[in-house]
Image (cartoon, rainbow, N blue to C red; front, side, top):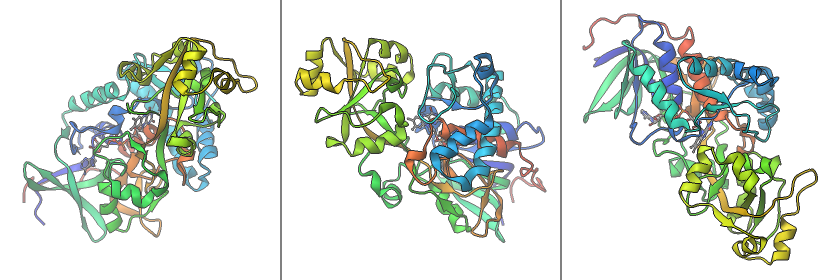
Length: 449
Ligand SMILES: Cc1cc2nc3c(=O)[nH]c(=O)nc-3n(C[C@H](O)[C@H](O)[C@H](O)COP(=O)(O)OP(=O)(O)OC[C@H]3O[C@@H](n4cnc5c(N)ncnc54)[C@H](O)[C@@H]3O)c2cc1C
């Protein structure tokens, strides 16, 4: 076998999981780590995400007097997903999560606890975010900057992986397309961090036909490349019908409104002028399915000045406001006109559920629909991130994390809890990069030949 180059750890995909894996693996100065990224210009989901990091038991929570723990976090996730079989992976991720968040903060990134970020299904406030609420782009810039500062790690952009190399069932390297030619990279370990397949319409139609025709809110690079390579080596996949959906996508704009709005009194009214759901009871992924069943697959999210003040600093609200996606209605009559209903019907629709407050004029309104942000099905891994075959045995040399691996939502999108996506990605990157499975390659002799 002729190799073009050799590294100890080849990471495929330079998003959340890939960069975290590389940062951790490169702490060993004797290890050579390369991240092969399809296209940083096209981007990763982590960079367009809100950057909300779920973690239970952090020092930020302790300072805010919030009682939480990794176990409670794991139990919340599993209550939502019902996927007990996945408990060992969930618990491993939740155990890593506080260390991930505190480590990111210790590298100089400005993190705070989102005390204004309650979410359905979370029994404690545990979303952490950057102090400026600038979203995931800022976080990914910071982490990639840390990686660039390492002598023993390289971030190779515009270098998509196109396949795996294996010998006798062991993964020995990866094939990279670069500058018009194929490079065979020998590696002691290959980490698949390519995210899911939500950008591949054929795969989405095959595995998630029940979603209908959702707005797609993820990046174009999520084409599920790694799944096929790993499956050819006997890897298993699970929960392929689950996705990270959003019921907060603004019609005709594609921006999203804040998931905290319902917790600040916002109501959803459908095109028939009817309330149809307890707005606080559903996470945004689960709410997507509810919206899909409404007339025109949409509903009006209505809120007032108090709810606006509590949410407008989120990156989602800033984007929606900047896009002109929010309508202002000074009076009940104006709101009724926006809804195409009478004032009496509108008044009735605004009747608060027991224990909730009544909205007061002036009002704000955005028509929201359902979207798909990312898939949650993927490769079966063990709690160390090793990819497993049909017999439940690790495929030597092969790891996966983030959206390339099976996620935490369980078999259905309704089981997705806010923060699960980056938890899977950063958490498994932390575990894989820090794990014993990544020993240096046996012989780093000739770089070519
Ligand atoms: C709009 C939006 C908002 C979100 N907000 C949140 C949030 O606030 N909190 C949260 O927890 N989750 C959130 N998520 C989900 C979260 O972003 C993802 O779950 C997470 O980014 C997955 O991490 P990853 O490393 O697996 O994939 P990514 O971060 O998407 O990175 C994958 C990388 O792999 C590269 N790649 C793909 N194929 C190849 C190939 N063949 N060769 C080389 N490179 C390849 C891609 O170009 C990409 O850079 C959000 C998602 C979206 C779309």
